[in-house]
Length: 110
Image (cartoon, rainbow, N blue to C red; front, side, top):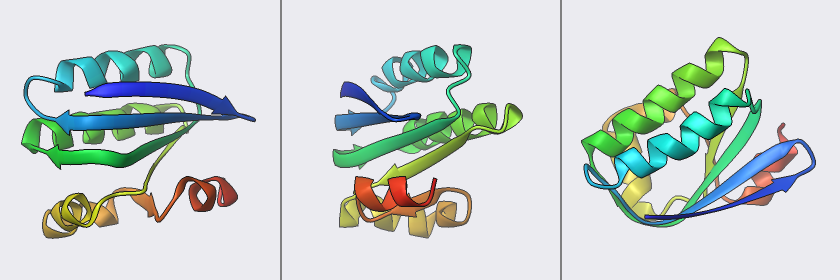
């Protein structure tokens, strides 16, 4: 998994690529540790280049969402492939996460 980060106004956008699985979840957790240590309040995860997420990846995303909510932060997901989106639908995580078609749509609602 690779991560590229940019800041647009007061929103941090993390673009991820590759797979989020048991081997890469610790890398993702380190990214989240940096963001939550700074109490970054608005984060968009661009998952457009993620082609696979396993249960440990989902658990890491849920953990990040919960950590951010403790300080009133908001985490949004965007650009999910059909395969990844269907995983969120099957697991009912669409009720937990704010999901958008693209980065622009995710920005508009902040």
